[in-house]
Image (cartoon, rainbow, N blue to C red; front, side, top):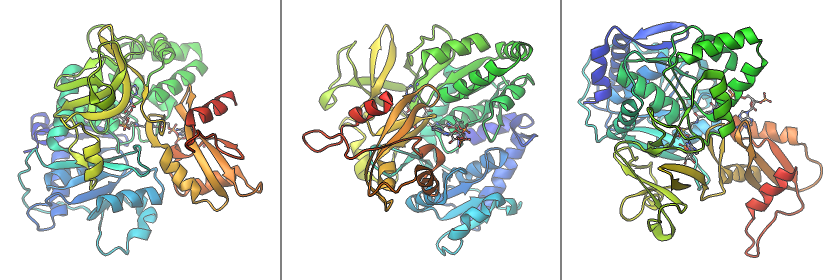
Length: 494
Ligand code: MCA
Ligand code: AMP
């Protein structure tokens, strides 16, 4: 029994989702997701963990397909609508998806896959109201695979069980006082935890409403805020930066109107990347709210959070959430003394089950006594955790997306005119970090704009380097290893 879905019966006539200018009740969500599940089963009793990938825009349809997959016993694999074909292909291939549910607008994009006999294609618009029964699903079963970049080149599939997801949701609904009267505006993608679990999952658990704006636009966000329905908002720091920039361009009367409506909000959260204190302070001026900053990972959901009630310390991520154990460890995973920097290690029912088909990587990600090694370095001081950085220079956070420098380097090296390259994250006020690439070229006959077009066919937009330098050789240490911190300095000097 999946409790998240069972609970929906208590909220039947309430609005669950608002998307495309329409509202949908919990009753509709239950009915349509049942049809999706029965269609996917197609006569079988249980999907028994088959991976069902789906490519549909954020909104009611997305939630119905996710719940339908779960109700039929499948593992949901949400695809990103902004990804180019090779990235979509990677996820389908790596997750060994048996079925792809897609909405018609993505038919052209997916055409190259249609002749793959082992994959079953289901247009979401053609799912009818077939009758049948659904299996009983145990909470220990795997539910979701979300892809995350790591210190290895290719993204890894993070498998969470229904039990993991429920724990990730309930620690937040309790700590942040979610109720059925809440209405959250969701502008984030649904192939990541922030949009999928922290907003959609928490709203549906609580009997609240999750409204979708499929494409982020600062102006539209403010228009929706002024309709006075939304009372909860969550975003990455880049979005708050963009909202502040838009607000500063508006006439004083509009600014006053927006600020007046923002004061009535119950909760505003920032996460997925470090929130600069300057953004926190500027948003305080705009909205009257001190943003609640929290910390999490795809592998763990949210782990550490500033308090809902009580002091939210600028520049700090707060305290462990209920049910989540945190420790800071130094070399050989030895717990360090208070006040010293160490790696955040995490334990709890929120922590993922495994990396899909990657037992070695899964085992490397945990200590021998079961702590998940985050790779983030923090210090605990004055009762709060503060993030100091990451143990790997190859992980970049840009716009809230986690990006592997190695993945981009691998692609760049396949370009016929690039002999070698190195990719780093460069600090940036708007994006947190922007991606910089140093290129060693075959010849001077090279056009960066053409390279960007070439990359667009191979990588999602947010993984494309924004800054480039051409070097004769990469900075290296005596061991011949590229000194990425030196390279960063070269970019920062400009
Ligand atoms: C886009 N642009 C960029 C970047 N992305 N420039 C530099 N760096 C980037 N990373 C440029 C584009 O090239 C384009 O420029 C212009 O910005 C608009 O592009 P577009 O794709 O339309 O951008 P956007 O829609 O404004 O996107 C910004 C965004 C988006 C909404 C902040 O990046 C986003 O949704 N980020 C959130 C990701 C997320 O959900 N992360 C959570 C992961 P031009 O016009 O010149 O071409 S989960 C997680 O991290 C854990 C669990 C946690 O703790 O939450
Ligand atoms: P992801 O793999 O996309 O889930 O990203 C998780 C990573 O985002 C973490 O390992 C951190 O590096 C980063 N992160 C999330 N929240 C915060 C925060 N509040 N401050 C700093 N970094 C954060």
